[in-house]
Structure formats: structure tokens, C-alpha cells
Image 1 (tube, rainbow, N blue to C red):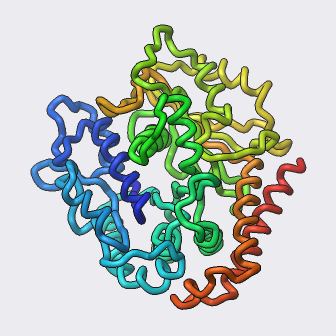
Image 2: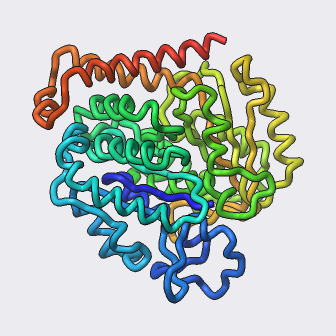
Image 3: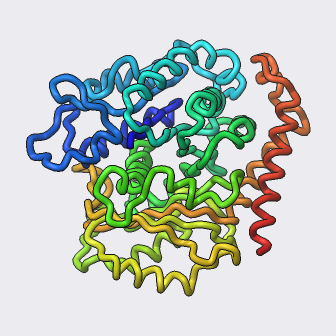
Length: 432
């Protein structure tokens, strides 16, 4: 079953570079799309790659950005021959960190080309499972233009699943004062048409890089490579043989108990720098327990008293089902679930070990576990965001930039109310 990846805006495109670099290494695909001679098992390649002439593989992916510079780096980079030019779509002016500009004006100019590229990709699929979108919520393209794309997919491909990885604004690492506006407006616009949105933020990933990888000053490229390890793990059971099979749609079925509460958080373990020599075999119980440690989360969540509604654990490498059973037995004593979700854990196991980019800041390991969990503690994330949104919107601060791009003031009111309702929804399930 094929999955089409959508990389929208600066974060989406730059993260795409790190992700496809890792996917290529895992599947034995060279930067020009050719398959290495040593590759024997090609079973999982077709889900994420399309085979062209001369047995060259290209990603089932569309890159789009309203300004050209970031995608131009892809066109001129090491993997320039991997991607097809018609799937690299860029405009001439950016969205200026403005949701309304990305959705109503500048974004409209690029919408037809993007829709056409997605349509052609979908036609090349025999049995498409769904879409995986990568974008930021704080910028104008990742918020406004991405919401346009989401509506297109909801209208044209309504039977297909839509999973998103969204970069959430960081409390201490903000790049624009209007990030709360863009995030709230985009979340409201897509609340009822998106199945599952995995939230990550640079602050949490930066803390991970500092503590686990000993990187004093992590670059965005470091964070993208770290995040690509986790996303690779989430898709490993649909790209490789899986003992405990996990389908792409399983994300939605198992992680989202109520349609609006579709914002899981990502964790990965172990995370070590290459200098840390692991002499003892990694204990499955230990690495699984670490996934539940707040210091291994890729989103900043301050509430430690949250209850788990659902939890997916994806194991990779030299791990037995007995070891997984022992790890879960140990966790069930510690992890608190809501009383209406007694079983809790969905498991995936892929024997293909994790791979790291040679020479990168991430050390190699023989086994790993990645967790996606839906936790009521996420209400604190939305509450902090809404507080900033409310402070500005009550004064009408910066409204003129949005209204001048064709947005109606009522959208600000409705979007704010939607987030307040979301916070209330989380609070209700946490009351048990």
C-alpha cells in the first residue's frame, strides 16, 4: 500500500531532506535513485518509492513552498537526481509568516500546480493507503497553505487517511510574534478534516540533542536528523517485514479515541552520541521505560499528571516478543491510563535494525523503540498557546496584516473558541 508524502513550507522541505536521506540509506537507494547491487529484499520500497525507467526510484513525495530558496537547495543538492522536477513546486514570494497570506492570496497562486502534482502522484498508486504531511504551524506557508492542501485532500481523497507531523511553536525558541495566530487559525481550519497530527517542537528536540547527544549548540539539521530517526521508526513496519503488523491507518484507529483529540506526542529511545560506547546489550525493558520519560519526548509538555488514552510502541531490531511482553508487564504498573482504556498498548515489531547516517551526530544501535502516545497532559500545551493568542487577539494586535489578505475578523473569534473547546475536551477525558 502506497503512502504519499507532502513536504510543505520551510520546515517541511528541510525535514524532507533529512528523512529521504535516511529512507534511501535504509532501502539501499543511491542519491541518483539507483538501487545498490547488494539490495535483495525490495518488498517495502514500492510503498514510499515509485520505480521509473532504468530501474531508478523516486520518492512518492511532493515538495511545495511559496518562495524558491529552500526548494532550490533541493534542486542543487546531493539528492537532486532523486526527486522529479515536477514534484518540486515553488513560488516567487513567501507568506511573510502570515496564515491569511498563505491561504488566501499568495498560496492560491501555487494551489493549482500543487493539486496537479498530488493528483498525478495518486494516479501512480495501485492501492494508496494515505498521505503523510510534514509542515510547521508557526509560519505562513505551513499554516495557511497547508490548510488549503488539507481541504483538497479531504474533498478529493476523502477515503484516504491523513497523518501530519506538525512543528509546534516553542515557548523559548519563537521565530515570529504571530506564531500563536497562525497555529490557532490553522488548527481550527483543519480540526474536522485531519485524522492525526503528531506534534513536535524545536525546544524539546533541542533539549534532547543537548542531553542525549552532547550537542551544546544544535543546528536545525541536527534536530531534523534526530526527528527523522523517529519518523523512520513509525513507518518501519509498513516499509519492512513486520512480525506484529502495523498498517498506516493503524495510527488513526489506535491513537485517536475521539475525533478532535488527534494530537499524539512522539518519543524515541535510545538516543546516544557515537562517542557513547554501548558495551552491554541494550535492555528492552530499559529502552521502553525511557520512552515514557519526559526528557525523551519531542514535544514540550509540562504536566506530569496526564493520563494516557492510547499508546503505540514500535520496536526495531534484535528484539523478541517475550522481551516486549516483559517490558509491557513492567510498564503496566507505572503508566496511568484513563479508566475507559484498560489495555492501552498497540505494538509493532520490525526486525530490520535502525540505521544512522554515517558521520552523523547520532550513534548506531542494534535495537530501538519509538512511542506515539495520546495523553490528556497535552491540554497544557494548548492552554499555553491559547493564553498567548488571547493576549494579542483581545487587543486586535496585528489583525490588519491578516484582514488585508482577505481574512474575516470572525475567523479569529471562531478559531479561539475552537481551541478553548479543545482544552475543555482534554480536561473532560482527564477527569476519569
